[in-house]
Each structure stands twice: as C-alpha cells, then as structure tokens.
Amino acid sequence: MSSAFLHSLRRAAPLLTDPASWANLARIASSYVRSMHSKRATISGLPFVLMIEPTNFCNLHCPLCPSGDGRLTRARGMMDRATFGRILKQTKGTVKFLQLWNQGEPLLHPDLPWMIRRAKAQGMFVSMSTNGHPLADPSVALEIVRSGLDHLIVSVDGATQETYARYRRGGNLQTVLRGIEHCVQARIKPHRKGAKSAKNFKRWGLPFSASFAPLQWILPQSAIRNPKRPWIELQCIVMRHNEHEIPAMKALAQRLGVDRLSLKTVQIDTADQAETFLPSDRNQSRYAAAQERKPTTGKHGSTQKKPADMLRASLGFRGKMWEDGTLMTERTRDSCRRLWFSTVINWDGTVVPCCFDKDGDFVMGNILQESLEQIWRGRRYQAFRDAVLRNRAGIAMCRNCTEGLRKLFLQ
Image (cartoon, rainbow, N blue to C red):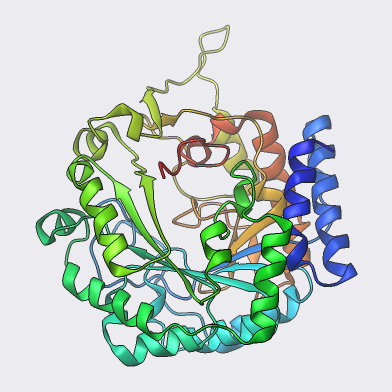
C-alpha cells in the first residue's frame, strides 16, 4: 500500500470508533490498490463517504448549474423519511462521512434538521452546502445549528450585490450575510465529550491529505482549534466577474467571523462558458485548454465507436456522454478513488457514481429496489469502474471531474 494511503488512513483514525469501521476501510483501500495494480476492478467493503441529495429543487437560477438554469432533465422531488431511514439502516457502521447536498438547495427540504439528527445519532460526520438564503430566518439557522451539523458551507460569490447577482441570479447578498451571522451567533461550544473528540482530531493531525479526493473536504486545523459546531466555511467560486473582489471577500469573511474562506475554481462545460466565466488570470483556473474531440476512423474508413458510446450501448445508460468542445482539466489519470470510497444517492433513491453525474446518465441501481451492497458490487458499477481504469478520458463526465485535480481550491 502506498505511503499516501497509509497517511490518509492514519488521519481517518479518530472517526473509526469500532473494529468494523477499521475493517471496512481497510477492505476498500486494499481493493482499490489491487484494482490500480491489475487495471481490473475489484471491490471489497462498502462506501466510507456518502452524498445524499435531499432535494433537487432550488431557489436560485445560477447559469452554470443544471438545477438552477433548468437544464436538469431528471425528475424533481424531495427524499422522504422512509428512503432516508432505509439508507441509514444499510450504511450503519460503514459510512462515516455524510454530505447532505447534490443538485438543488438542501435547506428547502423541511425534514433536513431531522435528517442531520438521525445521521449524527449513527455516528456520522455531517456536512452541508447551501446558498444560505433560508438561514436568514433566525429559527431556521438556530434549528440547523442545534441539529448537530458538523460542517456548514455557504456559497458567497461576491462581496457586493452587483457582483454576487451576476452568478447567483435571484439571490440577495445581504440576505445570505444575515443568515451567516445568525449561524455564527447561534453556535455553542460542545459538551465535554465533544471537546475530547476535538483533541483526538488534533492528536491525529487532521485534515486529510488533499490527494485523498473523497475526504479532501474534511476540517482543517482551524476547526480543531475552535470546537464550536458547525464549523462554518464561506466558499467563493472564482470567476471572471468576481476575481477582482478576492481581497474584499477575505475582509468579509473576517468580519463575519467564519472559520474559513475557500476560493474554488469554476467548472464549465463549453468554450462559450469559458469566455464568460473563466478568470482572466490562468493561475485561477483548473483548465488547461479547450479540446475538440473527433470520431476515430478505422483502417477501412469506417467510423469507430468511442469508448463511452460502447459503454453506454452495453449497459443501457442514457444521455449524451461525449461532448465536442468540452474542456480538459489539467490532470486526468485512469483512476478514480471516488468509485471505491464513496457513492451518491439522489432524492428518489437512484444511485449514481458521483456528483458529476448531474442527470443520472450512469444510474447504478435504486436503493428502493435493491440493497446498497447489491448495487455497490453489481455489474453496472463494476463495468463503470473498469471503464475508468481503462480510459477515464473516454467519458466526458470524467474528463471534467475534479478527481486528482490539484487546483480545485486556490485557498
């Protein structure tokens, strides 16, 4: 096993409170290493990190978000309590990190505080990302804080209303800032048991290595020094229209009293979007250059199918998987730790490999029809893992993914 994996496993130790958790993580890691070595997918254990989509409804209309701008083709809805409970029952003792978001605004779900409390009762570290508008209601902010949420990410892409609204269309900056202030004021220090846990985090040297993609969002040292919960992160996507406000964003974060300001590189899908949104400073972009993809031609002049097309045909996946004009991230290797360590469950119970599958083009199964273990070890999941090991760049979704990317965050 590589030193990087040993380092990451050591840092995960405080959250593995029982032998079964350790054994599960060890099985996952060993199967990933074997798969990388043989270039043939094998899987042991169950997901260690889980993303659950409470809802894919949203209250904003962000132009690069398929949920906000109307490009999302799958059905809209909210996860019911029965589905959430079924997921928790099947992940007890294996999932230690829960991300409560995907497409949509999670705070629009009326049962979100209940979901957080249920997950915390099962010993999970719970993180949530929001545009922050519902938190302007003091009662909502207080309920989220009291739910036991560990990590709150609030998206603020500008220090002025004019800049903020260029991307967060339909949003109001002052409303979001008011919600953040409510959360900062409502935080309370944990009881003695919680303080002891914080010391354990420090002893083991969290955060995780940034190279360990499924866990790279975990708390940094500032969260260890400040045991208040939730740990609040202000997240700014750096784009052409707001890059000049980075100093003002730093000042804003300091004034609000949040625990961290993260500057995130923007994800785009087309060259037209690149012209509008990519920062003028190339050092603040995750992309190398635009790449035009052309069909390959066989020796007899016939057009050959692309790898992604063949995968779609063999497994029955729907949706367009190879898009001309898609930009390449600066790093694309034939590997993906997400496929061994984490998975995503949408509001309707459908399981997809990761959050980059916005429309559910790669549905691996449905938690309401079969168990997560059956899906995780099933033919579709294994075929997708094999396809990534053979030629990750052959899948458009994977070419635009942040797995292994060094420039996901600028700060």
